[in-house]
Image (cartoon, rainbow, N blue to C red):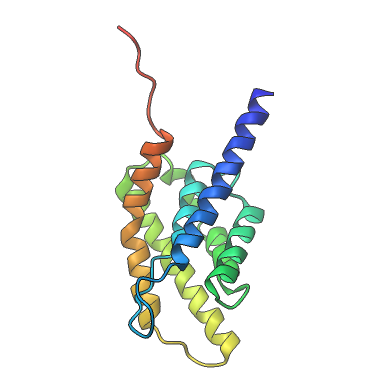
Length: 170
């Protein structure tokens, strides 16, 4: 019973952080043509939970988060979701060794994940709109997403007490 309760709590936590990250990604910094794109926090959270709760962040959850991100952010439905799914499948073998490595290596793994996800999403969006989409937004938003990952990862690991060992009383 305790294991079911812990799994349910973890599932709710993963869903809540994923959808909160997507909502935060939707908030604009300014209004109009000078608005600056936010990092895609949903991609950060998906990668974070793929490392730390791989039993929950499986294909159905990634599908759900990717589709929600597409619908909330106003992207072409399915482009972001499909790019997340493909990037997850292609980088699946890289994740188990990254779980035990320091932050720098996880950040480099995240760089591959972001590059693949943003590249695939750009290709799928260009194909759906039958025109080459501008690359500047992809580079700016992908770069900002890459740069924010260590902050989010360290904050979530500290808040959720991931990777800490129990202290023994002397």
